[in-house]
Image (cartoon, rainbow, N blue to C red; front, top):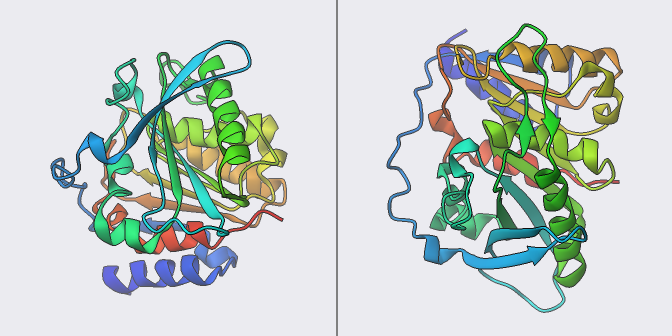
Amino acid sequence: MTIRRYAVILVYALVTGCTSSAVQQERIQGIRPLGKNVFESVSANEFQGEKFQAPDGTTVSYRLLAPSHLKAGTIYPLILQLHGSGGIGEDNVSQLDRLAKSWAMPEVRERYQAFVLIPQFHIRSANYGPVTPDQKSEPSEALKSAMELVKDFSSRHPVDQSRTYAVGFSMGGSAAWLSPMLEPSLFAAIVPISGIAPDDSLASIYRNLPILVIHGGSDSENPITSDRRFYKSIKDAGGQKIVLREYEGLDHDLPSDIYPGFWWRDWLFGKTRR
């Protein structure tokens, strides 16, 4: 089977919702890292700057990208876009990484009418320490505040509360993993990218949640062993809605097929919490 055909089969399975064991874990070859300057044309000004005060008094700065065709009487999906450790700060700009900016690209924004919330964490959103064979992530108080932001925003805006999604890369991928642990009934699907998964004892929380895990097989910063471990734990717990997509030879980076990435965004937007 050629590399091209190998990848096409997985894309077809993702889009059509096929969940047989043959397509739930795939190794993808020949995909280069996403270019560093792909989104240079996207300005921070395209994202509205906002602040939210959580119930515990914590102030959460965030950026908002609203649907480009907001219509009265229509409800829209909400994407919680979670940044990596390089976005930690208080300027309400640094969290706009490549994955966040990709939602503002015209062909993506037009196709996916949604609210995109991009909070900035002043501390780590997920903690997981040095690399070890049993490495696992745990949420910080800052991530808990982001959950409050999502719930508050959804109560005040025309959000389809059955279609709330979490997406993130690196520390943000770990935070995407952890979000359903903090709010099990909130998310319709998650896409953790190059993150560190939670403890195996939590696998049952994820059993019925659609999950698309994306990770470089040669990731030296957040090794893929964590995702492989938790993937197996979810499967052992009876999970049938998780896909692990491993990119052979890719280090700690986004794969180039993440943008425009209609294949994974279509998969995400097709998921509804029941």
